[in-house]
Amino acid sequence: MSRKKKTGGWRRFQGEDFFLKKAQGRGLVSRAYFKLQELDAKFDLVKPRQGILELGAAPGGWVRYIEDKLSGHQNLYIAVDPSPFKSSGLAKVIRGKSNEPRVSEEIERILGSKKLDLVLSDMAPNISGVRIVDDSASRELAEDALNTAFKYLAPGGKMVAKLFQGSEAQSFTAVTKECFLKTVLFKPSASRSESREIFVVADGFKAGR
Image (cartoon, rainbow, N blue to C red; front, side, top):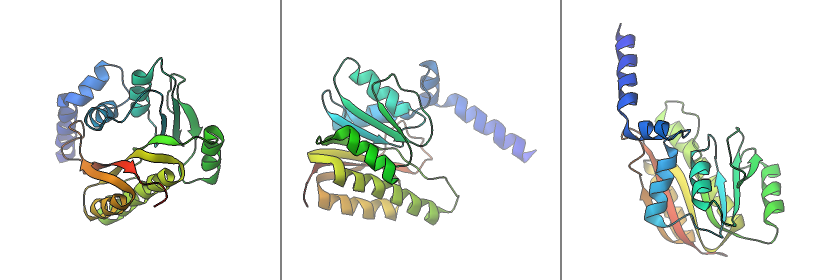
């Protein structure tokens, strides 16, 4: 009986969730669309005629936002994930994990001598329920994003990476401050209030540091 009540409460919560209902009403795959929309509005991230790399692109919420905003513009946009996701055709899709050598090789093939202006990571680990384990796994994914930024980001470029709130997020932020002129932690209003997800937003990449 208690399980039934719990499930019913969860369903009611889902039905009352503003951003979930908004996403469903617009035929979006997830509420993630609105997270990037808010991040972009606040930090001026997604711009025409820039090079963008997204890690952890599935199920496609950020892909949809980027392709909606950049429709009709000439952009180099690469989206990476081992799972399938929909694209209007603007994104150059790479199926694989961010730290796989073949993924790096494909990114380098697409870029050639070009550099990126923005690296985005919405990657999240499979949740174990053990906070210290999950925080560490989240930190590792953020470090993958930072290592990718070191490889491909142009001087002055930006990076956004998802983490879980806590000591790992704070220590990772300290590391990014050594590599970027400005680094802040930000939680979009579209994130669930009970979620510990938070985004490191770093601006002004110090190439060669």
